[in-house]
Image (cartoon, rainbow, N blue to C red; front, side, top):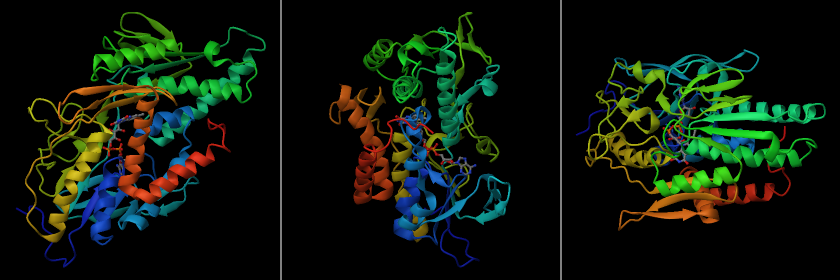
Length: 443
Ligand SMILES: Cc1cc2nc3c(=O)[nH]c(=O)nc-3n(C[C@H](O)[C@H](O)[C@H](O)COP(=O)(O)OP(=O)(O)OC[C@H]3O[C@@H](n4cnc5c(N)ncnc54)[C@H](O)[C@@H]3O)c2cc1C
């Protein structure tokens, strides 16, 4: 059955609007744009540049340059055949089937684009998520997050400045050090800890004569659960834990953070950790827009959709971190991961094609396939498991092979958007740039 036909009075083709050009939304816009063109498909994002979110910990450490890495949505729209609208979606009028896109101003406050109302026949929400501070006192004020490229870039610059300051301070005070506390021992926290450790060493080598990362950069990773990487197999968690402690990173498990202050992080059991910089990577929640739709959301604010990614409103679908999709057993929901967002984009493409063409929609439900998990443990190491297709059991991988596989996930995202040749050219160009650029962004 075709639930959401085009407005008959308009005589226009079916309008699909995708809000959020992240891991899932951009792939969906590219797939649909190539097939149906800009008159049918519009992507809206509050930012002009796309960065694949799982690489934000590298941006925060400076091992990835967001200005090199970012892909312009306008360029992608031109390449893939969709319309791009810049601006933050502030409200959805379900009755009139329009979205309200906020005005856009430049850094000087000059108006670039006015507020707009865009009409849709089908709206796909792909807004992602933001950090969940779980009402921890001081966290929102004193901790930074990896929610956006702006956050990652701000963290990088603060970290760089702090390292220079410690380098200077060491002339008079040999005990000066930089204390970084990362809250959350999931994949983001683990990857960030290793990346910061490596980046610290590289920055020091580029010209901080008094700063030694292995001595003066104190990284503490705090996890509330009994072990790191809670949802992943024990073997992976153990390997990651060993790698971190080998690098001199302090790992504190069973340690629930009760308060974040400007200069320290305090645990519920009284433990205290000095902190010049605190990064919060301890959980996610959906953006407030999801709760404003007047449809059921779960306890972290994700829109509850069915296994066909449909909301109770037949004109609204959702994918990725912003929604809760039931898993096979009905008790759990699909994890908030790029892997899931990618699969859901692939699932929705034929469904939306059917809507655009006014045909019967496929009825098969979306089934999450866990292809395994890979965790980066620095530039030349990783750890993870790959799910065997036949046995359904995980194959443990580690070292350089795991790291290469991890990097290939990013390339697969580029491939879905840019196609094979452009992805290959981009990868080669980035490899060549490494010969003339510092390994860590220094300005
Ligand atoms: C540091 C880090 C490492 C990670 N590593 C992994 C990993 O290794 N593997 C993995 O599977 N997952 C990983 N994840 C999780 C993964 O990034 C997310 O699950 C995935 O990006 C979700 O995709 P999405 O399309 O739902 O949203 P996102 O990729 O977050 O995209 C959301 C988009 O919506 C836009 N947007 C938001 N609000 C508005 C609005 N109001 N109006 C207009 N536009 C809006 C944003 O600008 C953004 O472009 C990691 C996450 C982080 C932070």
